[in-house]
Amino acid sequence: MVDSSVNILTEWDIVEARQLGRNKAKDIGFGAVDQARITTAISELARNIYLYADGGTIVIEELKLNDLVGIKITAEDKGPGIQDIRLVMQDGYSTSQGLGAGLPGVRRLMDEFDINTIVNEGTVVSIIKWLRLGSD
Amino acid sequence: MDTAIPILKLNDFLIVSIQRDLDDPTALQFQQDLLRRIHETSARGVVIDLTSIECIDSYIARILGDIVRMTSLMGAKVAVTGIQPSIAITLVELGIYLDNVISALDLESGLEKLQRELGA
Image 1 (spheres, rainbow over the protein chains, first blue to last red):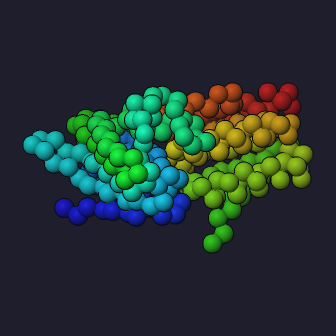
Image 2: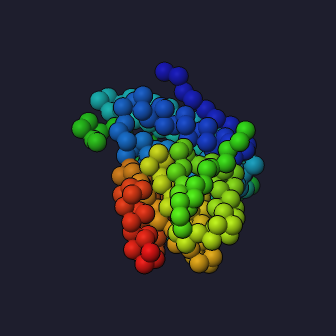
Image 3: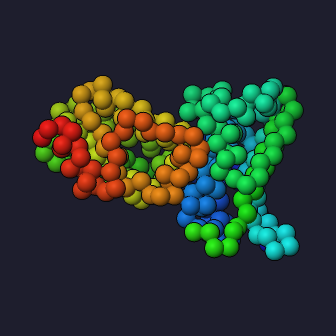
């Protein structure tokens, strides 16, 4: 199984990560709606890295667990970290000029969401979407 | 690489069909180009067709929302058309609502809706 990874340094890398994610989601067998959810979630995470962390990586991999198939995206950066995760995970919170969707939005788009952050060291966000048989 | 999005004039209207997912610089360039064209042509309405778009994240959605508000400041109205089911689902789940935006299923009905709104 070949995993894909994109270094996020410029705004073009956001587009690349998005395309890579869409292709992988398509290959795994996700339908149009889940492809859009996955692609958008990757876009949000990649944009966080681009805006706040001065570089980081998006890793996209296929997951197989017993009968389950899914896609896992890991966004890792060595940025400033997040002081108060609970605050950031509240809807409407955003440190950017974005619409404030940010991480709570990403969590809603995916099935699993995990965040680890250490101030002044960096942040790792990993998200998973499971493929449901018979979904669109 | 020329990434400019073509803006067509049709009577009092400007028609834009965005053919691929927007990256940030292209979206910002489009914002400026469109406002300039509205100024040049005194267009009263703009239809932006998004049929071919497969991904709108919060940043691109914000730019689209800004375009609608800026256009309104210039006295013109925007209709957004052709949003795919997957995009509509994703935007709402993400927590993004494009309020006060005229929208329609396709270019043709968007143009009709806009004409009615403007009493044209």
